[in-house]
Length: 201
View: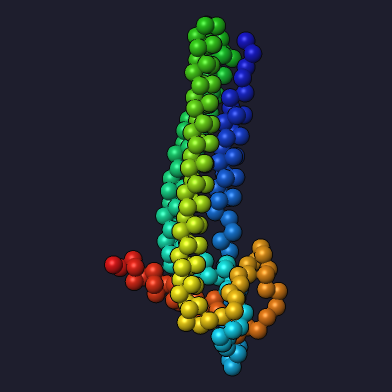
């Protein structure tokens, strides 16, 4: 009887789960913050910028949402890994029974089909969970972006800057500039104050 490499498929599933964990949770390294140089302060009409990496890492709303998301993600991955290990163990036990000649051909075929169905169901569950978590992270990012954009609209009514740019490690819109035009810390303070007020309502 031809053996199906169920054990290898289980191992590959564990590797893909681990790779997904790294992909979704990477990119949280804290960038270097810059402080404005004394005497250099942005005024109305200036083009100012925000270091979006620093803003997100210091934004309480983002940190709270990401913490909840990561806890849910971790629990989901642990459950999938537990099921995958159980399937791998059962596949090894089945292979051992085959090698010892402890199963009839019909019993072996039936058990192999059950293992294959479990493997397929587990792969489908992993795929569905990945899509669900990616959608949740997309919504999370949109909530944070909308909160920042809404705050900046109100913020700029008072300050009347010509433009507010964003810069990050991945997309350096601002290669070099007057540190007094970096409004990141001021915006983070305002965002966190607003978030705390709304959270405590």
